[in-house]
Length: 403
Image 1 (cartoon, rainbow, N blue to C red):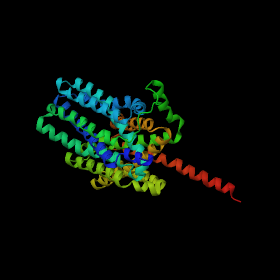
Image 2: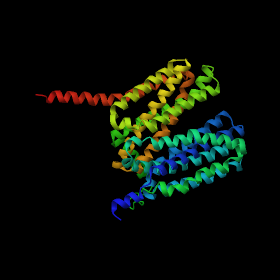
Image 3: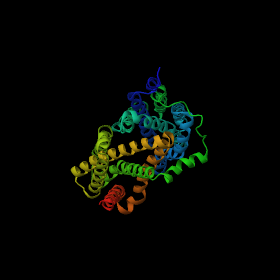
């Protein structure tokens, strides 16, 4: 068998990668809603509910960078299976002690395991993007979102009705174990772990983080990803409170707006990737301007139709920007190492999401939650400045060199 044929035989098909990402997203969505329902059934205080909600993200922030080092050494299959086994096993322990603080502790521990799965999936998808084409850059994230936002929560509600909040955990754990069966097929594209890969250490993690200081383009992409995630999470987390408390909407109307926004985001991830391939810079600028216009609408209007239009436009714009950041991460991975970049991306996204929640929590009472949408406009528009400056510099340089 020739080298090319052998490489093709080792390459996973796109369907297996997308299916694994969807299954992983289902587990996340199922666990998130099951945790919230179980915490409510334990009569947790508002403070305990908030800590439990943030515990998994906090754990993920701690171990994302170390997993970026480990995936280079262990390979994505072993790291994904390790994280899935640990998370699935821990979820079996949840109903043993019906106390909110116990649930908080286990949720934090599960969060420490999640980057094993996320970094492994991100690493392989980055490697395959060169063969798949950047038009499909959003498919991986889109399939995760379908599992996490649409299928997982619906299953969690069905399980809670069938077995009660405390009886769902064996099946939640199973949802994390089932993807292990597909992992060897979907993640087989990665070569055997490199013997020269450095072992996990504080120095190795520090060098990974130092990439942000050394590479300005990577830093800019991470800042954009951070801003996109913060904006998306702020909308998702607070739009229900804004529309129900301030505008008198019903919970069903607010949930419909949130669902429409999510569907627009997913639609962009799956179907708008070609825009970046053919008109990348123009699509980037238009997406930023659309997001800014949508945020202005969300921050200033009380009209239901305008809020719906702004929510849909914001979802599509953020999804298109996400395609750009994912494509850039893949290109940086080819130059700097896919595992290291996957670790960084798994850190930046959740950090942005947490910041979006903190924005509302810290400033919402003083400024009003709706007005905070306006604060998100300048950071997004600031990303238009570097291309404009580069274009101006190129124009001036051309004039100086003209005869």
